[in-house]
Image (tube, rainbow, N blue to C red; front, side, top):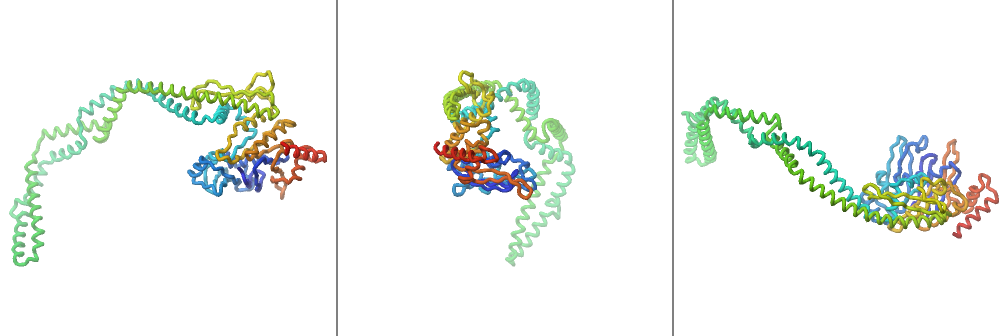
Length: 558
């Protein structure tokens, strides 16, 4: 329920703060006074589109904020918690700012949020219905949505949508498989050649690195022998070799140690060095024994590396990349070889999902047919209370192409006069009739909040095009709605205004050469004069005041 609304620098409103109450809150005023601005501002709090055109001239930004009594709904709590929004003391503050440059910002409980989040929580707070929304009644998709809301088919519709999505995914995969099969068959010869060529090379990871090293050795055998011999001689084979010098040094140190034990660490350090020199010498000797020029081996190495280079130019810059390419080719060949099995499997899956979807869609259709009959009777009862007693309302359900919404389409039909064939809503000539149908549907489709807390139902000139007794019927209907919900309504009819629990007047005034709109909650006497003005025009006569008093008195007897 809307507790308070603050509007600043929005259109012709400089600053307005107004408190609303439970029951029927009616806004009246002369044509062009800015009554609908309040509704538009509230629409922004429900996530509506913001426009820089609505920022008051010479202002940097427009601001709209509303304090709502938040319903105790687990679903709403989950949405708010996910967004990090805390509703304190059962109330939540919603704000929108529109900058003159066109950008807008949204806040919930003083925390920045997206307009999408406001749209998500709006159904828990209220609903706005204006003349522009009557056009939505003509949409087949919107009509189906209304029927589903009334029939509470959410679970069945979700199951149908899930099955449709899965059926469509598998069907597309099957179609893609069939469409690309010929192309893959043409590529099969190339893939087979590539696989055989790489397989025939019998490549091993790192083989090219090993062969490159071996080729360098074979090309430099003489140089390697010369260097290895010199090193071996310096370490072991010459008269002044390192091994000879190490043995001499170690022998002298050991003699010293027998006299002075403090030199034992020096002897201990020399012994591993002597062993290291001996091991290095042995390794060089073994290396020299193996080192031998082999022209045939060098030729084989060159041929193998050339083979690898050819494969690298075609399939990758390294052995690892060539082997990865081979795995990819094998996978493609395997997919072609198993395509028949996959196609059979997908076809069976499409068939299974088709049957499951048809069964789910049939269950959904059955629920919709039952709901359509109930909704038609409920709307007819509402229309009867709106002075359309002989109206026939029909919801015609027809088969449609498969979709996530099922296999149905619905059309709302109406016959306002006995003996006439029901016709689509868009062919109703009378705007007053359409307004009453919209109000009847709104009443029937309005679901109470899960917590039982009242919602804010907003009607913007829902009484357009009607008058007299019909207007009185609309007022009674709004009054009835307001018994369980907070209703905000912009009206220009005195017959409707007479039913208000709380009456507000919107006026334009010139202040310091600028026009600005103001909203004031009326006292009982002020309310009588406003209704009198609505009846008689600018000059309020005694007869108009008397008539206004009578309207107010009669509404209290409703």
